[in-house]
Figure 1 (cartoon, one colour):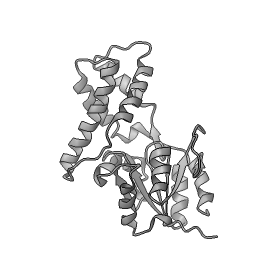
Figure 2 (tube, one colour):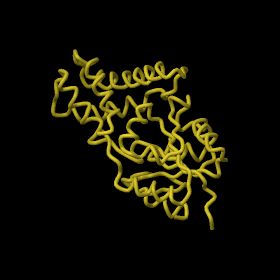
Figure 3 (cartoon, one colour):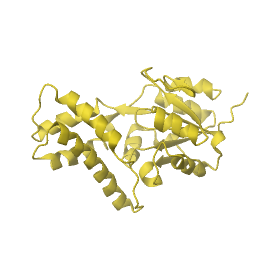
Figure 4 (cartoon, helix red, strand yellow):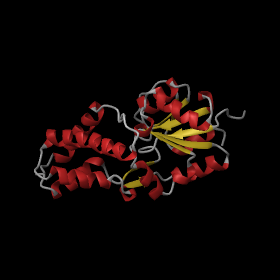
Length: 238
C-alpha cells in the first residue's frame, strides 16, 4: 500500500546530529578558562543545573520579526539559561566573556556531529520523492550548523521556533510548517527525540508522530517508536 505521507519533518539536534562531547563538557572547559573554580563534582552539577534551567525556561518565542532584534532575543534567552546554570553551581567574574565565547561555540558546525545514518537516510528519502522539512526549537544558529554539516540541501523548508513565533509542542509551529508545503496534517510525518515536543506535539497537530529513541529508554505509550533513522524507511514504504 502506498504511504499517504508526502512530507517528513525532522527535529534537528539529537535527531539528525548531536553535540561533539556534551553540553556540560563544553560549558566546564570554557568556564575554567574564564576563572570558574572547578571541583570534582562540577560536571555533574552543571549537567543537573542545565537540565533544570532548560526545563524551566519559557519557550524561545519572541515578539519581534526583525532579524537583528531576533538574534539579540535569542542570545538573551540563552544568557538567562546559562546564567541560571552558573548561579547554581558557582558564578565567576568573567562570566560575560565566557558566555560570548560559548554561545559562538554552539554556532560552529565543528561542535556538532551527524549521526552515522543521517546522510544515507535523507538521501534515500529524497530519491523516493518525499518532501523534507525541519521543525525545531533550535534558534537561528541552526542555519550555519546545517550548512557546515552539509545537510541543508536536503530540506525544502526549515521552521524554527524563534522565526515561527511558536515552539513545540504547540500545534501552531506544525501548522506553519505544513502551510509551507501546502499539505494537510495526515499527509505529514514528524520525527524527533522528544516524547512531549515531537511525538505528542506532532500527533496532537494531526501529523504522524514518530519518536526516535536511540537509547531505548522511553516509556512512551502509543505512536511509532524507532531506534535509528534507518528504521524510518520501512515505515514510509522505502
